[in-house]
Image (cartoon, rainbow, N blue to C red; front, side, top):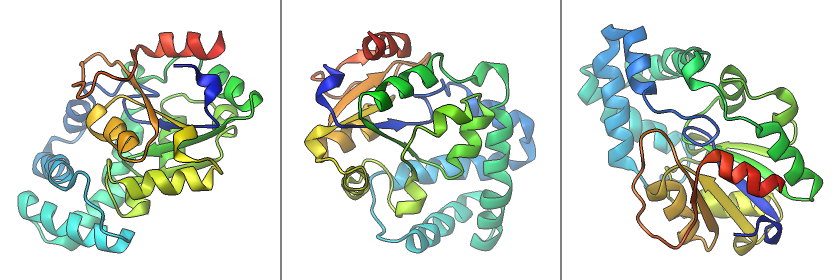
Length: 229
């Protein structure tokens, strides 16, 4: 991989810019009475992985309807909990020391920006900037990003290709000139392959599956050193 060959870099957030190993357990311990809600949220995302619902509204309807069955509540109550409690709990959990941001994120973003490369963050969840600040990513680093995206704002879950194509278009780059940096090959990597982008997989404390062995698998420190070198 030669990062100089790319015009745009799309970073996943959770698991990539901080190691999210154990975050589900940490969130549950902070609110054990919502076990079934949290379990339903995770299980429903797994079931809907890769589905494209065309609009955020259609995605929310399907997501809340399915999850509410497993959470033993109605869709409206699940939606209220998710939008007003769950994401806030996630941001609060990210302030803990074990979920601190990776080192040298600002330096990596600055180098990419100085080299004329556009940067985007693409997360599974909303409130990206709020959560990024919570885990210790500086505002200066976020200011170097052109755009922030979530699967929810597109109405489709990774690895659905529409979102990857749209991000590339927004960044003014052809898909083949984009590099995706993420921790999961089944979502970030698969989405990159579906759209003709290149992929770098970032290692986490809990190793993620590697589905295809034609991409680099690096620690964040190795990726940063290659970018800054």
